[in-house]
Length: 269
Length: 233
Image (cartoon, rainbow over all chains, first blue to last red; front, side, top):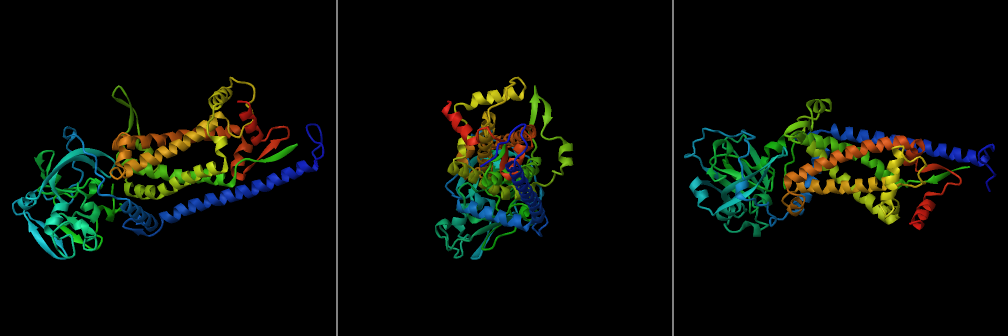
């Protein structure tokens, strides 16, 4: 039982016991807290100083890959980017000129489509012979700005279906229904190969992924990617490669211009 | 006679302090991302009163030209941010701690008294409570803000796959602005929180580190105060 104590009375043994206990708890608590704080700073420093993989410390690169796995597992091609009224479309700024040759001979230009089963060279008229689709969607730059744009062109899905080159067998027809036959990646490059983009096949064959020849109702200008560019609303704008030279379906993950420069390879919406 | 009273469980303290490194990395990496399109400003009649952010701010904290790095950190620590928040909320629900935190019908009146007291208008001391009305509002509010950051963040992270959410929040650009404003909210919360912790004193601060608080005999325990409060409604 506790002895009487209080204001005016000398402190009792119990008071000293409480103080001892408090001092002990304080020492232990602040030691644990201090060590935890140091561990957190050390952890941050450790991550920051790990060997970079394509300019990103490898632990963060692993997490970006984990994010990609989760994103791909939850991805559905049935979910479409929001369509806006065409009147809200404006011209986006030209944010990148890498890989674009403004003096490219448009008549001599060909789209080269490659896959393990073969290759095809297509004229712009061949692309335009595919069903024409038009969408008005947000072009979302990885920098954080966005811009509503009306795109018109052929679906990459239709090109894959008609050429059959997105599959190992090379057989034309809906490639999305043949999961064992379908190649997992698509790679796009400019004619000079200075700009290059890698896509997972699910995003490449999204129904809104277009091989565009028109932007806001007019043919593409040189710096917006004439004669043919990609518009892929399920990705950041960095993936919408301008002035396509080659489209290749492949079984290995293609390199990507911005992924090499320290960005997420998937960059998917 | 003084006695020790258990105030914050180890779980509460862990979830509380985990916010420090997690929010530090999220806000820092968020600024690295925001820099690439730093369009927000407070305007009055078309003139910019304050631009988020002035050049000296970016320079002082070396925030420029690190967009890729910012995204890599942000999209790693988002998991920890979400996990810490979800586990904390689950913990308060399971442990019953939510009874001390969620506003009830007395909260607003009590919070008003706290404000009067803090402004020096109310002279009598506030009744002993684990968390007073103002704290209940602040600590529940900041959890709601956390949920808001998570949702607005997801809306700009996956604006097609989570298109319903992006639309619900007013669109892609609106969600980005909301995400930004919520972050300013954390900074405001943090500043007021620090000021209040300093005012409340060492005994209160120490309790968030070691769990126990020094109390005086005759004072009701927090549980008794809580029960008395409920009984008095």
